[in-house]
Image (cartoon, rainbow over all chains, first blue to last red):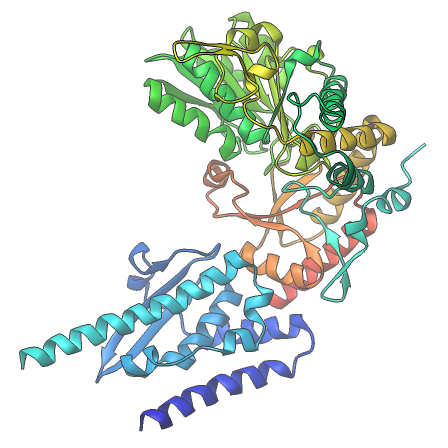
Length: 152
Length: 406
């Protein structure tokens, strides 16, 4: 079961990498990210606050996660559209998964689509900060579930 | 006769390269400038043939190195027309120079309730060292505002300068607005009250003639890497009498005369302010850069850049969705702008992929951004190796960027 989930997770990443590989020009890749960013619904204004802000990026990124039926539901947004496109990719990959699935997986699509090497360290720090924050949410919910179980 | 820019560009090897298979259009000179071949060669030659500690050895290489280092000091002196080499201190950069003055001058002359006057358009490096001083000494930081065009409101000096003002620290030219400040008027008014003035020339020395004696400023600072020299090096100019009077800001080797555990006496100027082994390759590399500029002609450079400014301004103003921040007529070749509601970071990323290097963000001038109620801008900053064709490419790039993001 666990392996199957992991395979599916990696399949999505491979699909993303393939989607990007058809563009030989960087501007086309950015156009695609802009499209994805525009398609991601804006976050509820109540989460567009300093509390949900991720530091480490020139642009602002807000991230919130709920646990619904044991699965994380991410809400994210950015004031920069290309960053929002990257956020959309991350949400697509991480959404609707259990904390374990999020924590047990390797992220390789960022390297695969050349985002890390083509975004300077300060920028990709923002990207990594985003991933880190998603994992932190997963860890927090995992700990909470564990605690609830112990109480039963 | 104008400058032969095509010929000049050949002196800068980095400009030949392509990025993302497109010719590099480097418009981030406000952050750092590129080095002509002669600077690169000088640095390499030192490492290959002369590297040796200055002011210490009696051996051949050390003597040679010392001579070159002191000759570099003379080159800097001549470049800004200081009265003597005693007035030229090598530092780590403009930031290092300002910190040195904020510490040394602050120790000697600033006390509780005193005031330091800066401006609203300062780079963080001409804000924070003074704030730190104010915190240490319980002094107050006061600020000369600028108007909507990005010009200093000098008329406010009469109320801002007081008997409590100990020093005025002002940028000669703004790194985010592009404005050249009316520094001579500020100096005159400050001197009427016997208040010394420090000018931050980090964005000015590479664009036009600076004569510290004509300006009559008390301190002048600039960085080597923004004037085509090596990074990690810079200059603090100070009037000799003032420097003589100030305590050193760092202790160490070379800055001392006699050292015992009871008491240490200090070396004479300029060595009093140069503790430890100095970045001599940086200082000599800077001198090579200044010699290079002298060979091109700083007045010629200034004239060409004014043409470039006119051309850039017309091109940018021709783009309907573009708004320029900082509209002073008296300016350096630096333009900050925004494109409608497009995030500057998005625009910067797209321009980058077209091979166009600009800077985005606050440019270390957060108060300037706060003044306009914006979070940042896109900044194109040019020097004399930039061409009108590059400005055309920038304008085209901006139009494409707007298309992509709207």
